Image (cartoon, rainbow, N blue to C red):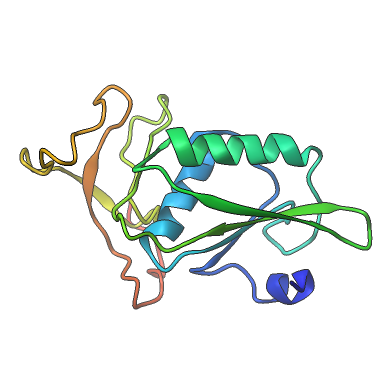
Length: 168
């Protein structure tokens, strides 16, 4: 895998740069977004401008990502990890998120945020309550204290570009 070629593509619908993972709830939105669309990759240790900064502790970063995928997303996701060492001796994590066959995935909301999290994680989406009978007996509703589930009125279509400006 050529890291430079991947970074030169820039961030987009299938590629996200993260300097580091700070908390499972924050990265969970990105992971759910990729799984709910066409899948993609997250590069941890790369600034938003494409500069390689590396990760301090690759194991810690992978722990946070595994926690997010297993405990902060419903249904949980399986991730593929790869460590790449650059010429400057930086470590970059490449996380592959496959397009899911169990859509939609919902990311847990950070307790302080109070807002709903869209499956696509775009700021242009507005929350709407889920219909009462949206869960079947074969797919029980997750613990309502842990997840604030919503259906989103999404301004982002997987076949088009993101909206030019976010709705507030």
